[in-house]
Amino acid sequence: MIWENWSDFFAMGGYGLYVWGSVVVTLVLMFGEIFLLAMRWNASIRHLGKWIRNLQKERHENKA
Amino acid sequence: MSIASYTQSRKSALSASVWFKYASPQLFFPLAGKLIPVFAVISAVLCIIGAYIGFFVAPTDQQQGDAYRIIFLHVPAAWMSMVIYLAMAFWAGIGLVMNTRLSSMMATALAPTGAMFTVLALWTGALWGKPTWGAWWVWDARLTSELILLFLYIGFMALQASIDDLRRADKAGAVLALVGVINVPVIYFSVQWWNTLHQGSSISLRNAPSMAITMLVGMLVMALGFWAYSIAVALLRVRCIVLERERHSDWIKQYVVSMEK
Image (cartoon, each protein chain N blue to C red):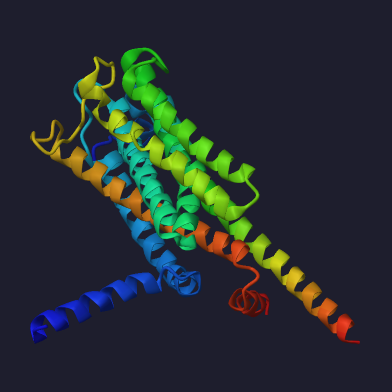
């Protein structure tokens, strides 16, 4: 451990704004990308499910 | 034909068939689904170890103080921005030459992640440049060529989004991606070819690394973590793309119905 205490760690020798500004944006972008992809996946499954049910209904009506 | 060369050719035919087998979206889709958690775990472990080394073990730099710690994010992000571009151009090129849909989908899946890492490289670079150079941005060769890389990614995505016919979009994107490959060596060698504010390579194949060993290890572990992240996220996105583009096939319909239960 190279830091005396936690406030030392957060201060980053006076460069806290630059270092934490980099860390926070990195975390936001990387987790944000995963979150957006999870949303896209769920939306696709939902939309395709609805689309498939509509197709089946149409086929059923055409037969009748 | 001798028996040895016959078995040899059988073997190579076999290994080639294994590769082409997974060029089929139907077979690749479940494989990608199995690989995603593996790479996600590898990435999480490596990023935590790398961040621990970078922020708790590596000593403060004598010249730059603790501002240099941005290196543990900046260099891996910059490397990935270039590596992903090469991978994207490679798959786009394979899709163009071999006419394999899945290769083109892989290229499309890689672009947003590459653009994200390019933005990160530029952002962390600006936050590192301000305390060390006194400027957020300078129009020097390294920074400008990295900015052009971002425009290439955006151009690739915009071009593909603007063409309705998916296979034509794949081909147009591939041409753009392949032409843009010339920019990657320009970025990489820019610090040697031109006088720039940007410092030289931290590590090179010819010289001993110009940094403390713990700094180097932290940076490399972090880079491998970002690499695993990129693979996991690209596989996740390519699965979304396969789902949407292959929706007319029966196996996707069956998959969707099984997922909804």
